[in-house]
Amino acid sequence: MPNVVFFSFKEEDRGVVLTIKGRAVNPRYTSLNFRVKDLLKRWRTENESVVKQAISKSINGTSRTIVFVGADTWKSYWVPHEVQMTLDRGKPVYAIRLNGVQGKIPSCLSKNGIKVYPWSEANLQALATV
Image (cartoon, rainbow, N blue to C red; front, top):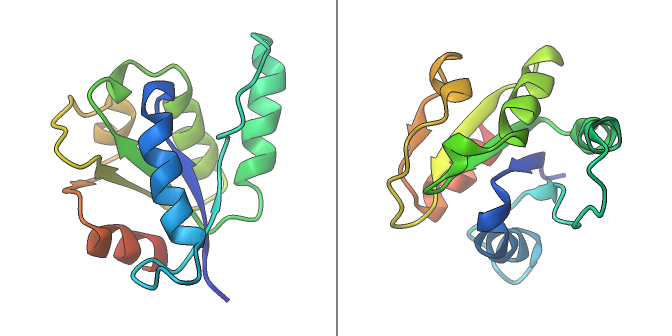
């Protein structure tokens, strides 16, 4: 049974992350072999407690979180919450850059000693299954 991974990302990177998720869950695409939980569903609320509850529910049952670092991930309000919720559950957090993007490292990663790996499907597969 493949690992279940929570994907953390900034909203503007939704399309790229959705493509990556599609490859990961496609049984014919064999270079990625893990299951994904995320908040790719768009939320039509600004109620912080509702969103936090949805994040918490999505992180439950996962083995780790992978943060996708894009150009402006460091500005994300929700990525630090997702990182902290994962760490509070005693689960590892990994980070990988989006292909061709060299955005600033979010402080929630650097202050927790989380290394950011360069993009490659091999790196993503390794982080998802370590």
